[in-house]
Image (cartoon, rainbow, N blue to C red; front, side, top):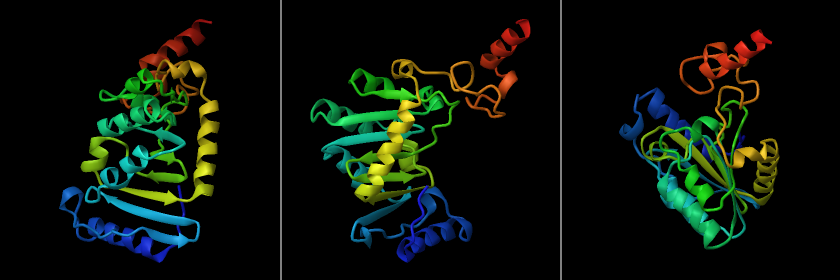
Length: 237
């Protein structure tokens, strides 16, 4: 998360929340809140704010950043299915030899529309987390830019849902986020560069005892068939 101390940005979010809370306007029924200018925070920091689905961050800023990246693109993401973004990542890796890496949620890797296998085929390292489906970040580091918010990189996330996104131009913040991304990547065994762990079961750490429905099938811990095998094995031992 990010704490941004700026009245102009606070006003944008206040208007967005008022539409939903007071006017009961959601999704495409909302009015467009103007966000045409990048907001200068200090001499080292400029921020863009997008309030979806009325604003179009993928077309306006994310894809141009991906297409013009010079050094690195790191993407820790819950769901990653947006076809245009997938193509931009592949082209950055294969045509411009950018350092492209992805960490994906285990349930996101099981999603019917996942495209992470295309990234792997293109030579992009994609690690699927084995923490029990807990990669819920929706962010990216592109050179010296850090992107974060609630928007998954999917068509629904960009065109249908009520989401928010901030794009922070600040090298220090981007470097910090990149360091954390690498730290997370090292915590995931290399076997999950080539295979996908089940978000609940023996593949994922503590997922059968955390009291959570990690794979979103309505079954928790010992009720989950993947976990049931573990409990049966322990009882037989």
